[in-house]
Length: 377
Ligand SMILES: Cc1cc2nc3c(=O)[nH]c(=O)nc-3n(C[C@H](O)[C@H](O)[C@H](O)COP(=O)(O)OP(=O)(O)OC[C@H]3O[C@@H](n4cnc5c(N)ncnc54)[C@H](O)[C@@H]3O)c2cc1C
Image (tube, rainbow, N blue to C red; front, side, top):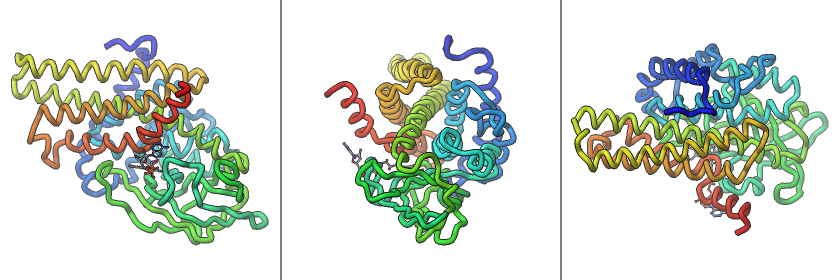
């Protein structure tokens, strides 16, 4: 299909480059990584060497200065590796934990955290959620108290992707006793600091090639220079970040749907079902689902790439694409039948993984709440 004016020949060449990498170095190993519950860190280094981890960042700090549609294409192709977990872990590195470092960080933050993350030398994580606080970011309890030139941090973070092995966390904390969204600040916290520990590695329904942890911070001291952005403005900074995360979630969902479609096509070909009208109708339904999602996502991405942050539409595409991806995985699971339920079959995996797309970066209900407020309901 032709995706002009959004995608040019250059984007398609880039897509091919990413696809070659994914099909030769990721897809053949993804089942092993799913079983291991993590991916090998040398893959991250390899992606850094290929220039895939810093597409959105300027060349001066080690990035590629790529246009935003390359970021979208990358997320799509990554999600054709046969699982959602590894792509999600990479997205945390490229599009969730690091954009605030670029946007709000100092030269020290860029040099110490961002450039090594772009090179794949440091694994990044993002610590927002807590054991009792997920959707409502303004209610987080992790607390940092100033002590001279340092801050002392206490609290815990839950469901942290890359958490078990991350080198640092972009951490959301409370820095004053002001209630709600006031008095929240961001810190960059190295995970080898005294008092920082991994309480447990979490076992999950899906996204299994991405490792996830509960983190504990007990009197963790960080220098004042590790404060990211403006003290007390962390809530707004993380809300800015979540818009970027939701755009990537939408591109990822489209990649997952394209992948499901290709598996369905293969199944139809292998079983010579091309003449079966019912089967062809199923395939048509899937294509409609994907293309409607894609057009809206690209249109919103175009606005985002040009400096707008249309939060209503971003929430709409996050919600709709995540639901559609889970629906498409379900349709293909149904089409293939029992074979697709085998634990080694990619479709059952995408079916499980795509359910988690409807939770991370804001649940379906939270997206609906944002949209309903924006349209005045
Ligand atoms: C695979 C995976 C990876 C993750 N990785 C990270 C990570 O790297 N970093 C990180 O910080 N977090 C991460 N999370 C956590 C994720 O962001 C939260 O799970 C999510 O924000 C929801 O929070 P919660 O699970 O605490 O649910 P809750 O907020 O407790 O919500 C429970 C239910 O209530 C609903 N609900 C909540 N508020 C409202 C409302 N106002 N109106 C209507 N319904 C509502 C929710 O939709 C949900 O159905 C990850 C989660 C998953 C599943």
